[in-house]
Image 1 (cartoon, rainbow, N blue to C red):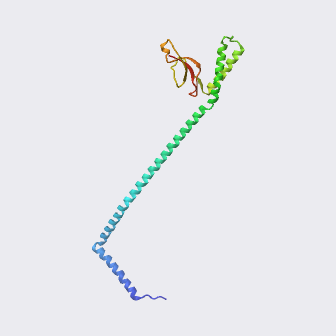
Image 2 (image 1 turned 30 degrees about the vertical axis):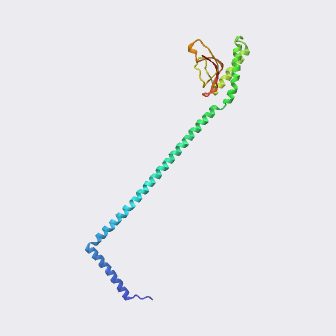
Image 3 (image 1 turned 135 degrees about the horizontal axis):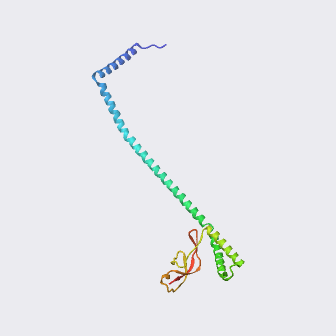
Length: 204
């Protein structure tokens, strides 16, 4: 069984009374408002010290966000350029696909044209001639559907990008100087690219 010390209880009561008296004195003398003001001032100081830290954090976060947006835009632009480049390469590849086969068939077209030219003196009702002409036009139409296009060279200005000059000849007509006066081998385009240069004679 525990016993309370009467002297200790009396001392605690005196301390409580003293504290209450001190608080009453402070309230009486107006110290409570001063303490409140000091506490308020201290709070404002702490808030002012905290505000720059918050502003710095906001600026840092804003800078990081801007950098992430820039990185996102750069990645998007790179991907878009890659997509466009891949599409262009694929389109060019598809256009160029089969160019080797078409190029190898050009001599066949030349042979057909020479055969038709040589048979011009033959009766037009000749079945053999009609058959050759029919096969020639069928082959030509198929190749044209794939992208083949014959060049028109005679009478045009000589162009090193599409013409191959075999020789030069003197011409009396001043207007034909520097122009193609004859064509020894027809040139062709394939999907807007030169697949075979035209071998021509240039007037001088």
